[in-house]
Length: 118
Image (cartoon, rainbow, N blue to C red; front, top):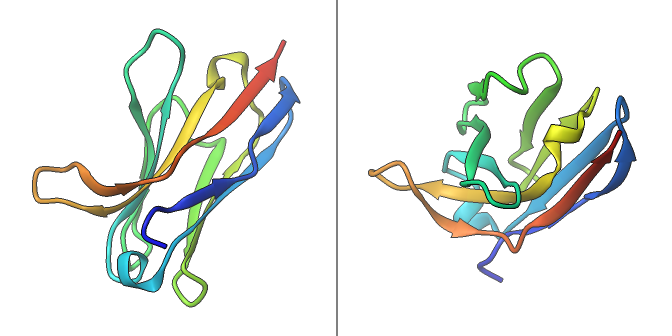
């Protein structure tokens, strides 16, 4: 299995929480920067959070203080803990693995839908 697989999306009320997971083979996960992106209807895909192999992280300003990205290299798994969700967080969330030199990623998941109701 080369393509990452996301899970954990769903429907939640504003103020609620969800935890997304991404699992992939060790070949593409273990030694590479990983990230979560999202795309809302009619909008461009945007970076949500990124984590290096040494667990250095950075976040989009819109999610700082609410979302936490983490990884477990032994289990080839990455998570995105999303708290205090807002309707504007509604989007399809994608796992991206193995950052390229141009900043893009070699491997993308199929996406998981997150819907936040007001």
